[in-house]
Length: 455
Ligand SMILES: [Zn+2]
Ligand SMILES: [Zn+2]
Image 1 (cartoon, rainbow, N blue to C red):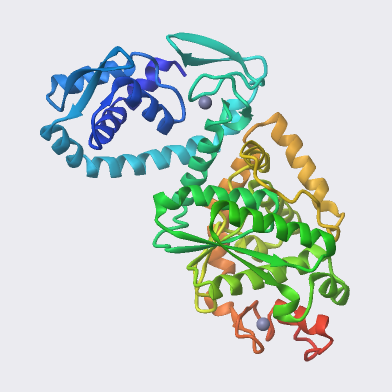
Image 2 (cartoon, rainbow, N blue to C red):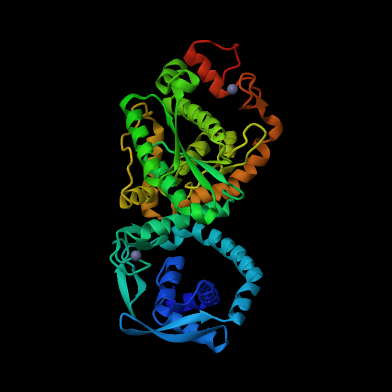
């Protein structure tokens, strides 16, 4: 898109942002440009901010004084009383604008794959220091926010960022996803599930970075699954991250709490290790989040995970499983904790870059019990499609979450179909007396349950 047209669209918003920053105190044009570029995620064209400042000043919404900094003459701007009135009067318009922009974003983000198609060899234009510089698509090029050499390229967003701005960009993106699905509305205390891997560690740091915005507190929860050296390294990584951020961290030892470890459960149940482990983790995390007094439990499932689940669900026709696949599971009569997946529209690759650039302590080993099945094949194929069609996975999952899942939920996620486990009182799927967790636990402990009741 031509720069001029783009900035014509943003003009009203940038004017309000100028007033918003001046409402905090006086500021020079350079400082305003830097702060607003940071919010927009890209550098404003040089001179643009001065055109706006001049117009606002002409309307009496701000005034200016000359000062000096480091021996240079600098003009500082201040908001006037009528500027303040003007800003406050726009509350309704900003709300309406936010809704309109969300609607447009939904449409345009879904089209990411299309616009980026045939991108190879095309040259992209960035504004930088008074000149346009052409950056070949595919190379990291220059940071879209500050124009310095970029460290990371984000193909589906068709943008690159330096080491300083990449983490900011990703955190803002996580926040946008969380807000769009109302993940943290009314939440005071978030339990973050931290396995010690890059996804969950990135989630912990990103949410810690957003704590001030949301006004919630964080408690980290790590489950010790009892898988030998792998679990010891994972717990160590989790602990180091809790300490680094100074957040409350809880390590729940599965064996101490429930009497069995994941390897014991997997041996007893004789089903794919990952599905058994998944049931156990889900249950233990929800209980730990409740114990910790949290009102939301955040887990680090990323976009690649979600895309893989969607594809596998389509392939096997598991409509009930697909209906349960959603970014937010509200608190209900069985659990008092809302379950959220703030990373479900964030690529795994982007999370790996975030952890790398921020130098976060991450446990790198793969789980030794991991199933070597068709899942890995589907995942690799999805990445291949993504390479040829940047944005494919994002579109697949977003369209699923916004269109397909709600339609399936109406038919397959009915409250009256949910039973109550007669052992623990947690939910069971239709027609089952005992929940999957209690069934696994009974097998692992060798206590047995009534025939036909297992999950
Ligand atoms: Zn930068
Ligand atoms: Zn149960």
